[in-house]
Length: 300
Image (cartoon, rainbow, N blue to C red):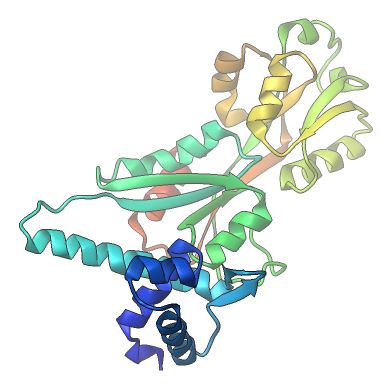
């Protein structure tokens, strides 16, 4: 039974996971590989689940293995801290708060959303990651992140236990470099017709809403680039290669940073933002601070 876990077995597992092989772990621990293999087997029997898959001559953590490793990291870090305290060393060290954001969310929005968590205490160490929604939700499923930021709510297509927390929404502002802006004649949005545009890739909800909007109003921009990374899209836009859009809530920051001009705005499309966590009712203080600040100030 897992309730009677032998922490010596867990320590052997932890060293193998860190070293990447039983042979290296055995050398580090000064014991035989056979001893470690036997202890790992006993731990897997107790958990009733495999912790490693063999890939060639190496070992690869299973999904259960990644989960156990996350907890083992915390357990042995706490053990080290306890040892330091008992030796009289001052107690210090920030607790990690790991946030993963979808690549298409503007970095300025990510900062605005996450910043309240850093004001809670000097003891919070922010770890920021980003990637496509499938990958970052998978990290949440195995507890590799504490919170996911996305513009696409979790749906039944993701077979994990996690919950959407709606943060707010914003209309869109459209930007162009000054020379391109001069070429956009007429009223918005007609000034975008047959003009070059830079867009997020179709995996993102905001792109799907944009495509639906242009179809509804018979607007035909010329797509010159599609991007997973919003920062890269803005850099191409700054170079004058196309019109791009961002949430209106960060309009001034985009103009100031990238020296572009607003060529139109719409409330017909709204980009929505969600925090996804493993908690239905938010109790993590950093996640709670983020949700409260976003709803009350950023997207009010």
